[in-house]
Length: 255
Image 1 (cartoon, one colour):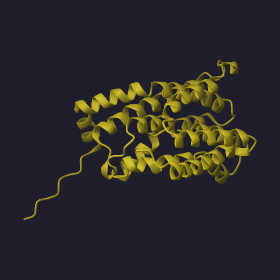
Image 2 (cartoon, rainbow, N blue to C red):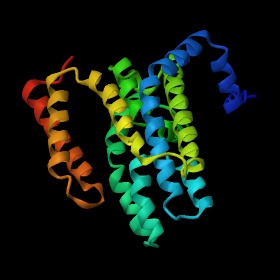
Image 3 (cartoon, rainbow, N blue to C red):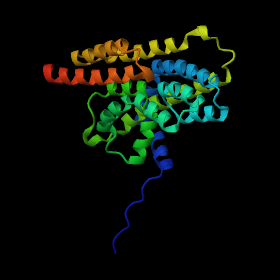
Image 4 (cartoon, rainbow, N blue to C red):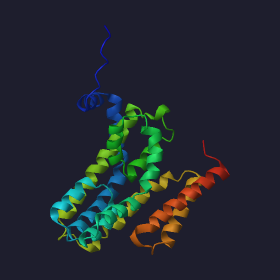
């Protein structure tokens, strides 16, 4: 009589196994520490987004749902005036998708680290994988694992960063909604958040190809700043991709 296949571990069982693994706990703690700067930037921008949502005129229940379910400042800020003006759903969704095209680029690289895991698990990780998390993770682990399956330590590091960043974003976003009437606009919190994210991104400029891509992206984003709906960001993204591909062919991929 053939033996039954082993049962698939439950999420609770996996979480317990991770928490009792010293290497996972150490990596988790390291992730929490390393994302501190990025989380501060996320907090500043989250506070700005929370204030903007509270003052947009959109129903408070919808604002709270958006704060908890949507994890992207640019698309939230772009969607708010469209929602307040009663724009059709397809236009709101299309605007958010266009402004978040950069995550398609991130996901192509994430696949080399996480593509070997189950789809449901990848979907959860995709929700948590914000910009600062991606920047720090690829800095720490520049070489993807064999088979696209991150090790337990790598997953612990990801979890520490992602959960810290997620908590900082949502706590500040909810605080912005609640304290919208007492936070002065003169604080310039969005600019502070941008500076914090720049401090996170600058250490990633480690070779000529990356530096060229960053310079091209900055130039295009500034030069096309007059485009509507944040399309200058999309143009900068495409230009950076083209510059990076050209640089890799010209100078070779660094090893």
